[in-house]
Length: 288
Ligand code: A3P
Picture 1 (cartoon, rainbow, N blue to C red):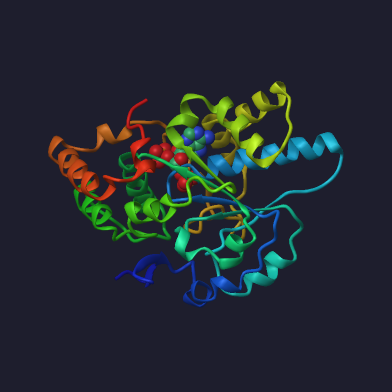
Picture 2: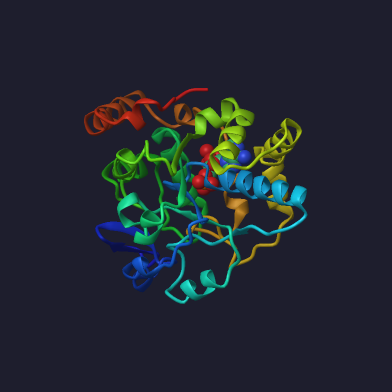
């Protein structure tokens, strides 16, 4: 196995998530107003983070006070991070790629708000493939075919996509959980921003919602990332601090440019078997 990846609880993690930290996740002290931003890698985490950041900033700008802190992912770093997180002002927006079972227990007992973004697994696999190729924090992969096999076996960082979704299945209707789909966000971003603001109890005018939608568009975010300096401590995804690696295509259906007919059939068979009874998987769209 590559020195860049280690296995914890049977799940491959980047070595940017230390074993010590993963062992002590339950010692994380949650606050009731923490907002968790959850995703399997490459599902639109940065996009959602940008929307949330702008949403709070707009609200607080109107009130003339307050801050919002977008923290690094819970699973990033070593246990010294708990101290750093303790010193941050509320509300904290906390990203994570952890599955439901691995979430620090206090986030569950304090019923913190959690937003889970899901992307269709074919585009997710393609996006992750390119991430493996471009990201120096991940092992190199050569062929798409080889990577797809790894993805189907769940032998990629953060493990099996199916396991991740299934771990959230029984919490999809919890009052503190909002489920979003990447494809729906692409189709109607304004509606999704509205939905998020309602969920968080943030009141915004339609002009403010439009403004947030514009600021968090793919082109706007990509352009912004080119200008920003790379800051090693600033990371939304535990797998990189370099935002320039994030904005590749930002479309729905790029999988069609990668999957052969045979690969598509195999994928549908394997996923069909596993996700048969998943309501979350049933709602997924594969084309724009
Ligand atoms: P692609 O590789 O298909 O382009 P994450 O933030 O979870 O790492 O997900 C990254 C994926 O989300 C990338 O997909 C990226 O282009 C896409 N993405 C990032 N910002 C986006 C935005 N504002 N709108 C649409 N897609 C976006």
